[in-house]
Image (cartoon, rainbow, N blue to C red):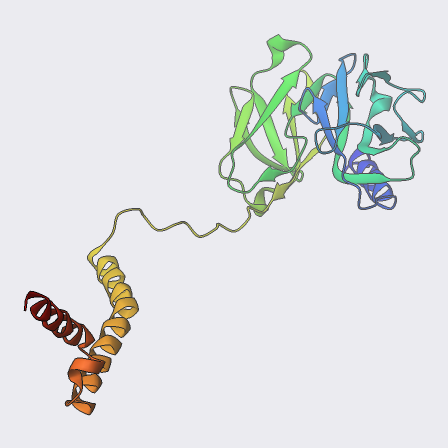
Length: 269
């Protein structure tokens, strides 16, 4: 492990000591972890679609400070480093303006290289995604070919200057760097992998199978059958228990009709 990589690791651990439960999310443009000297870099903090109360902080070899305090220029909600230098290498994160609350939810290691840089994801990559590493020389005509290394071990040459890691997993985590013959070697940058959340159960298909139809019919029968059975039992009990008075108890309507017929006959007489 190089001195520069060890230094960035120490800075990251130091920054974590100040962290609280507040979650400000840091974004950077261009979205890479390494830059050539003299380039312009923009950083901003966001929390629930708002950047109010947050600003960009960093920890370098010199000190821990916020944007505008000897480095960077605040333009609205964005911190702009118009001409980035090697001394700007360090850990960057979002914190409250007074520094009392700090979030490490999206802290970033930004490295400023010399003649060669490795363009790699600045934030952790989702497990299963593809990752492209690009080796770039300050002089674009010297970009090809490039050799790539992981944790100090050679992993391959690419004539295009770019290497793609397919369907990354935790085994792909590590420190990557590259070199271009005649131009030099890039600093190392860590590629981190975050685990994919467990898949949620999917809803059953809209089409109904014969088994589903059978279960639906059975559920309806379970609802309506007790009603019909109870009605049938009540009628049977009524007819069997009071056979002599069926017309009064179970057929009162027939008795009423007989009475109406008698009244009609008397009226005619």
